[in-house]
Image 1 (tube, one colour):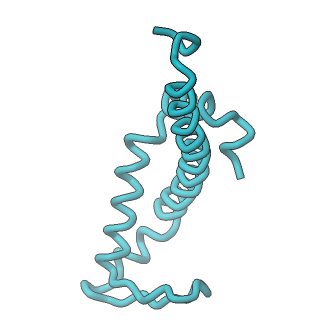
Image 2 (image 1 turned 135 degrees about the vertical axis):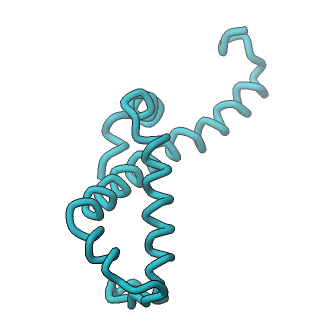
Length: 110
């Protein structure tokens, strides 16, 4: 069945869903761009510093983010691992092309 063959109710249901999905694709692309920057910075400069910390060392919140709490070395590394895992599955040329198609190229930067 093609979209044009759907009932008005089915079209409304699908259109409402797509109104959620397409903007998410843009948000995901922007978050992915930020994650790539974090990963690049980690590899370029922070990895050695973090590795030099003792197990259980606490990294204070010096970011100015209200409510952010100190993290242990292991918690920082856990977040870095999460970013690397997401990047491996989400930051591929094919996935970026699909997201661009879904959200519109102008909506995936920023």
